[in-house]
Image 1 (cartoon, rainbow, N blue to C red):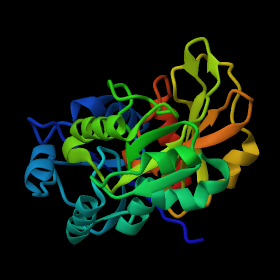
Image 2 (tube, rainbow, N blue to C red):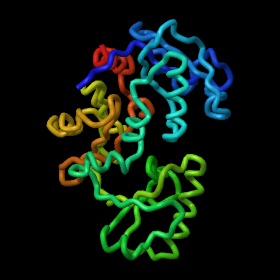
Image 3 (spheres, rainbow, N blue to C red):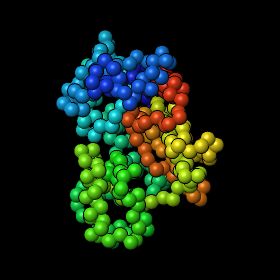
Amino acid sequence: MVQTMVRTLLFPSSFFDVHKVDEDLQAEYDAVQNTGLFDVVLFGYEKWFHHGELVLTREPAEPVNAVYRGWMMKPDLYERFYHQLAERGIVLITAPEAYAAMHVFPNVYKLVEDDTAKMRVFPLHGEIDIEAVKKEFARFMVKDYVKSVKGTAFPKYFDQSIDQRSFNQWMEVFYQYRGDLLTGGICIKEYLDLKKYGNRTNEFRVFYANYEIVSVSRNSGQLQGTAEPPKGLIEKYRNLSGVFYTVDFAELEDGTWKIVEAGDGGVSGLSDGQDYEAFFRALYQCFA
């Protein structure tokens, strides 16, 4: 396996000032600066995400490898981002094909199928035969190729009581919620019963970089001391197609563990309560 050395991080700027980091990423930016381990380059948020124009606070004197820490992009936008940066001497360690491999869940599914919920995919805006779906799944949830609409009025799952007309109506609501962020197609996933501690599920996010484990952190607001994913399961997914990516594990009611999500490491958030400085020190070591 070819490993990559990285000394540069790339962050989006504030919408209002290209020389300041995006306010929502200020804590990460400060942690990076406190470690003193990385050079940091900002790119103009408003120019890129609204106009497709790449504005950098500075350009390296010679080509450098870099890790992106910022907001999700659709794969086609990320591909343009990657190539425009490369023309300016900044080579992201995650190539477009690697980004799509981890960011688009149907691509990841074939790699983690043994340890995740069953899933079927459908094209956008086509009618999904709900009776056929119900024959395969007793309960199921809906997401597009990247995200669900968790935390909205959209049902967290459907069961055998749903009929075609009602499901079609709910899908229109789904499309409205996702709006311009709608990506790929529709995923119908088997709904899993997650174990709860109080009112919190027990989910962990694992960051992997350069075929090493960067961090394992509680990712659902649960208390310290809850069960952790089996080490063997975490190690099993250390060699997926991306060089920097995340896998989310959740404990089920019966005490077993399943993968509930995966993603590109550059656009995956750190967990609440995670030690940001420790994360970036570990990331540096993985890419050293």
